[in-house]
Length: 526
Image (cartoon, rainbow, N blue to C red):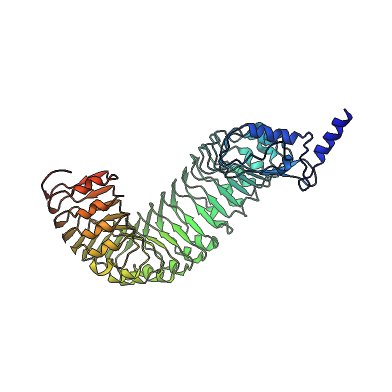
């Protein structure tokens, strides 16, 4: 018995920096072994070292205390593709400060973990947890970081979350949570980030959130929240990110928003029911990089003050009622020339009228996406647009544009998406389109293009969708189209094409839809 007692003392006395293969007895070791038994698949061999030949404080992902030898303070096994159930025995690791099992495929319950009163980091994100968030989590009074995002957690956000007095980061996004957002979260005065997006939360945004003076990021997008944005939120000068997109929120934005939220990096309110003018004061939020206001009911003009946003990267105002019909209302475009970092500009499906200003070619040389489709634009496309040589997406569909495209299209060789359909373009489709080696989707239907289908289209090995329907094209269908081994949709209908169907089109195994109707095609079907 004396020998056994000595061995037990040795087991408890082993420090993480002087580990010995002798285990002795440790409740923490037994808890870890129980955890290992719950793992049903370990494809990377992450737990291969968890055996008797090595002291458990040296096992992969296990970290022990220097002050309290033999006590586990951290278990970190992120991104190991482990499968199985989180053993309730983890709740016996009472010295645990960090539990990070993120990016695995664990199931199991959260309630046993509520015994871990010393926890400072709990990260179980990107797993397969199907539990609810327990009300017993009040023991986590020292917890600053809670990340349970990207699981299948159900039920409501428990009001007791408001008792985690040291919580600074709350991440429970991409789950199946229901109910309302508890106002008790406003008691967490240290909160810096709230990520609750992509759940099924309903009700209103708590007015009490205006008390969270340290809040930097409020992300509540993709829920079913209703009502307006509480005015109290617009006084949170610390706020850097506001994401409320894809809800059923409404109301007008206050004109002073850019003055009271000077530190905004992004504002994302798209896919809601907001109305009124886009506040010109947003131009005072000098750190703004992303403005996403698409799919609302905003009206009026794009504020020219946006030209002051030197860091602006993305401006999305698609599908609103934004107007521009004269030089004054197009002034914003001249101002955006100053935004040299801009990569995306979306103004599609609005009320823009008249000719596209020549200054469009002076926009940022970094511009990658330009969408002006679904407006009332007329005249020719300014040849200056060819200066935007980094464009990967150009959308001009559903306007009243006319003229040829030969003069400007050939320079835009990085295009992946080209949308020119439903306009009045004339002339031939340039052979140079065959140089667009990145092109995936070309929509040129419902115009007045003439000439032949360019044989150079066969060079576009990335092409998936090609629509040249409802034009005045004639001649044969080029056999080179049979080279397009990624092609899914080919629509050449309503033209004057003749000849036969190239036999090698039958070799395009990815083809899902082929429409050659209303032509003069003859011969056999391959």
